[in-house]
Image (cartoon, rainbow, N blue to C red; front, side, top):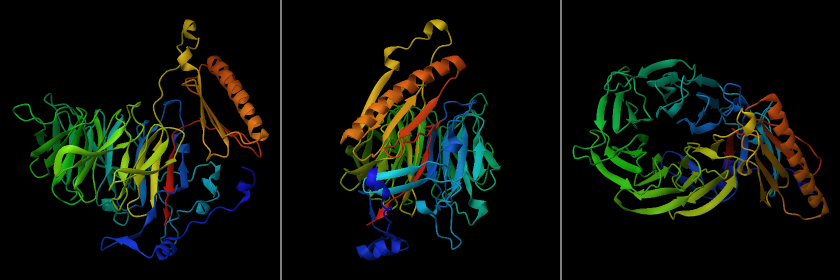
Length: 508
């Protein structure tokens, strides 16, 4: 870090001064936003990881995504341990949001001191979750009520869909189960929805099943619903499991449904009339989202490295493709469109968040959000902030039999990366995957060369030691995260790669 670490952090311009400096702001007639500079890396303001640390019951826990509430007061996360957590943004006494890293309480938080391209990271938990809800089985989908408002407790609800369970409507303040919406199959057994979504009016819940969409009235919980088949009598239409549902934000009465059969269909909301089917995704569709003006549709698929843009007024050809690193994972990689509708952000396996200009389809910038897969990204409804979630499922491990205690070649490998923007050397040892990763800065002097040698020797020593310890204690998964700084030399241990970051973008 050297002398750069001693410099003071760059002060972020306030919204008022930023707007004055630009001289203009974007407005929709009701709200006004200062122009946001997306080609500058955002500041990390909050960091959450303690709640997601692995436990004996689920040693392979990871996050599945993050979603902001419609009023922007909190965000909702889902993890593989069948748990949903609500994190509320801290507020000052005057009602203003605390979104500066210097404002995080001393009892815990993440402090990022930025100086040029360098940063000092002090990793602790920012604060605890305000609500924790545990489901009985794996969570398929979850969503906020579209008119959710923290000032009205009756509207503070979110819905979840769980394997072998009906749709649950939860109270976001107390964690109590408000009601359930149950669908039954031909054997009169409860069948779970693979995707759910409220219509823009908030009076109906649309749920996706295998070749079927069921519609529930929000004010009539129970087993009353309307059922629509996605396949027509001549076997045309949309087959497969309906994996994602999205509604046009312009109240045009259209909804999009993605399917694991690699198709996306557009329906009328009132009578579920099939308008057209879109083909072109390389994998099963995992997310669909309309543009803010409702004229374009963006779709992403499983093991598909591209987010596709469709013009719903002319659905013959794909408008453009937006790349993301997702071709090697089965999990959902979430993308989102910022409030003004100009830019789209998406995560990926490489730990980067990519920002694209939706008017041209051109890449704008990218920044590293984590050292693991970024599976969730959500922009704040009106603040220049975004939340990301990271983590992925890890397979493998040693067999209990003695004859399989030897390591094969593909389980023990060394991967080196160089990042000029990192003033520190990272050594990450993952026993569960037997993968050793080093993030090193370019060699600039003799001290840097010595630091590389120390990192390599220390990493291999840790790898050998953790393998022996795991075999002795018969543990399933051990993860060590070792950070080596130039000055002073420190060491920190962590046990999880499931993280949630809240980042703030700069005003122009």
